[in-house]
Image 1 (cartoon, rainbow, N blue to C red):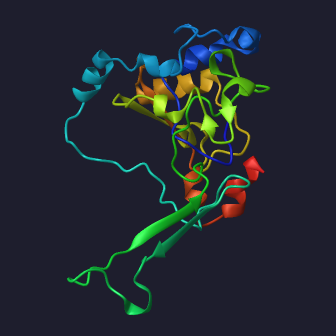
Image 2 (image 1 turned 120 degrees about the vertical axis):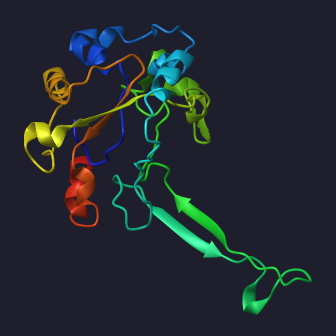
Length: 224
């Protein structure tokens, strides 16, 4: 579903998970990767999958996917980002050492969920129960989580699939509350001549990033 915060999301297991439907809601743990697993579908990112992805590189051209983060970037609900440039010990024109060393340092006061981000598997739960049946009371503390943290996410080098949902719906920006059904995804894959493979990362082009700086109110509205 399209929301106020857009992320590059998904793994090759996307269709299988969606196809399981609401009936499987009571049967989502323990994980098929084991009761102690903390990385979920990232288990699919094997050395073989990475090697196959590397073989796809032809031109070496790099495409930036990150969103520049600053205090003007519209963020989800309560989140904000503030950066301050400071020069410790250099007030009133002071310098450091015999070579008159000076420097700029950055102090950031921010929520980590602003702009481009990768969430750990402990980010989202259902009624305080998280991946693999972990209950919030057992692993969530004010200083962080003791399980399912972002540090558990392995490096990801794999094939990326971009699905153009704007083209599928025939609109420059996919409307709010639009749900991507299995049929929608399969239709785009067929149109683009693609087949999902185990370990693929799926990116959805929704057009929503075009709203940043032009219609921030609308950009935030679905998450309000």
